[in-house]
Length: 333
Image: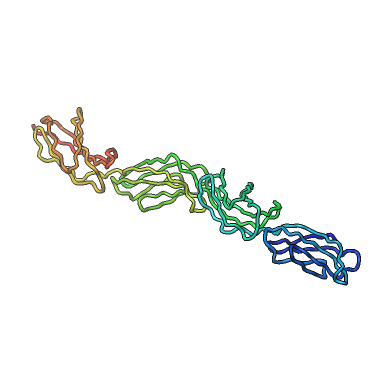
């Protein structure tokens, strides 16, 4: 009878056959514990279980409704249902973890497909490795029946892998109010970079950025993240901490000049500072002292010598110095 099956879905199948020799009245289709009849040479069977195996037997029946010919039969699997609630978690630079819920009905295993690769698993989760950082992948999950060939519809999800950490982050051209950050591109395909400091965020497509409007003599920690083209997925940050230069002091004056000493006083620099360095030289020898005050009495000088006194504000790291303000003065004879 050339029995064939077509239009196989998760819950139905259409059967088609050719009329046998002789005078048949109708046809009886038997499957599991069910029987259906039709006068046509085709029938659609509904209400089947997804991903299940069925054997359909078709008998030609004579006009007495009793006499039947020998059956022709066909075995097949209905399509499995689609999986449910596919989610992505644990995204790294090289891997993605997928998990999902079982489809309604039967299945044997799942096919996991991405780019040109396919993996099979019996579990409802799969860790995909050996990916490229910063790349958008689309993952397809399909339930497969026990014949290893009948597949249900695919559910897909797209995800960018994380980018690698930016490399060689340095700070250059540090001033009282700005800093130039430079770095090298990380592994993978980055779209742009996000620079985070204090409660601020700035972005750039370049591998350098100048940050302005900073407070002088203050400590800043800059975190730089590489961002994928989805503008959401970020790599782990690289960071650098530094102090901006303190501002120069103001209104440096000399008072109380004697043969052996000089008193200096000045106004605070605008912004932050930790202490001041006081340097003086007679063009032969140089000495340095530190003070937290805005005045300093220098002693043990030589009478009648011209000294140059320089005051520099220093940040709390004890190394970042602002520009010096200097004044020259002769000691008394």
